[in-house]
Length: 147
Image 1 (tube, rainbow, N blue to C red):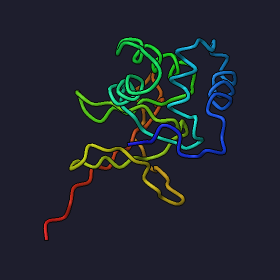
Image 2: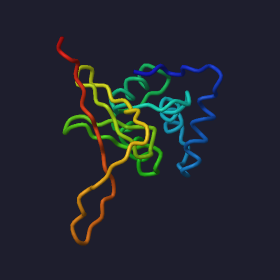
Image 3: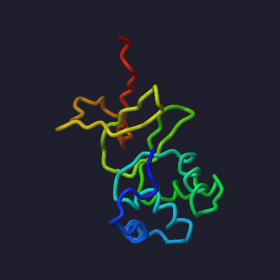
């Protein structure tokens, strides 16, 4: 999980406001506070709506889970976050919006970036006539080796 603000040399409010501004998202009080939790320390992260809701409730912002979901979807629509669907019951929001693969750790339920140099996807099937491939998601599921 993530700490509220790990780096004491950054201004989370300034980073959050700049992040919202670059996508022309109106900086309401709740959006700015939620953005502080997401990007305020300047590090990329993967978080579920429920995890973010728990951080908000433990911190200084009183929001409903519905508000957290609505805000996350607003950020996704603005291109600030990407949504990573792991299964029918679990999705994460990723602050890194470029195309990249993920590791899903089945033992812990954690999602992390898969660090792969020069990663390429080749030989995708052709999209059916009248359609195009809009996105390719790669989630590599990991579990502990049995010794």
